[in-house]
Image 1: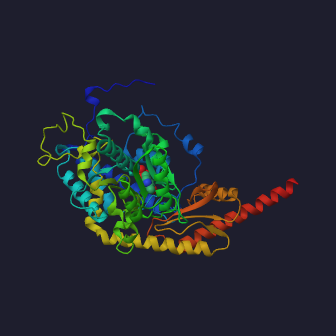
Image 2 (image 1 turned 60 degrees about the vertical axis):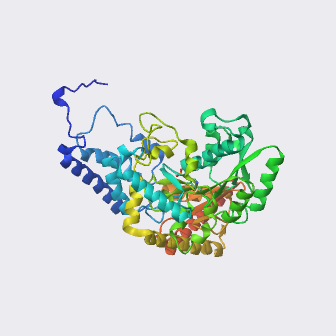
Length: 500
Ligand SMILES: *Cc1c(COP(=O)(O)O)cnc(C)c1O
């Protein structure tokens, strides 16, 4: 590799964002935006279908020690290596995971976020950004039904927000009931007996978070679900009593408002009552279901959410926001003091935080932090909650029609209707046939489906998050899935006959 040392005259400052490079800045951003336009114009399928090995082979040419001459060549390269094969979440035929189409106001905000590059940890790095974030947190808390003493913080995602919930639950329990300060002294010996109750369909981040917090995955008790895969509250109470009998220490319940696999909301009211009765922290993981906060028509599905102590919301799941955009909201802001740490150079102990606020006091795993809140600000101020709520209603109604369509079709099995828009079903045939369908459609790029296992059996999964997806789109996709399944069954049989 040749060593290249630039002499003082060779060094160019045209790439630094500053007053002298306004023209370079505009040209670069325009060129990038043009690539996005052609992505929109030229993408007919949700995926090109390229195999990983073929894509990886194209990376051999890239040599970081030989920079490209201009944006045109750079964008060509990025087009080849990335954009051409990027998954197109905006197409109805992308129906796999919880990736929503994004709204344009949020994209405009991204331009400002990255260029001005505020950091949300302290007022001196963000100024108005701090207050915008706070106002959006307050707004979200109000939608949840929390009172004036609530607070929260934007996070990188639902997994991180869930961790904050679990962390506060653990530290609160130890301080309140054991006079033990975990922040200072670490987990008490009895922490190995701490138990957190989640449903069998809760998100796996609960397990990961418990293990990160030194409680181990063993601390997570999975409660049975009902016929719609929602937490069974009788089983919950039984589980709490059983753990107590075993000498373990229940500390929290995590309810899921919108499960990743079924899009159904746990019975929040009843769980809230049980949490109160047993003095347990009640966290609601509404990473997915937070979209219901936008809908006057379907908000009732979240009845009881205000009984909780804390909530996870993922705006990047259900508020049509680009990744990342998420928040952790807590009912009683004093609980955030459990995690506060003072650094002399950032947020010294003696500072008056009413006078000079610092969001870092509320953040656990991020110091420097993106101003993601501006995207939601742009979105809400321009579109209003009503517009977003109408999208949510449309999605829910399309999903319900789709559920009926699958249910009435003799060639499919549907496992459950959905409060939100996830449908788990299969072509009535062996698991292998359904596996084939998913793989074949993925590598043809035609339809991107998800899959999951229920009771050890393989199922296909639709996640409907796009208000532009019509019932005709769904019908068309079901037709393709069926044809794909049929073809595979016939081919397999023909092969078997040949072998005999
Ligand atoms: C997606 C999801 C999460 C995790 O959120 P990320 O933003 O992906 O970290 C947590 N809980 C539920 C129910 C989810 O669907």
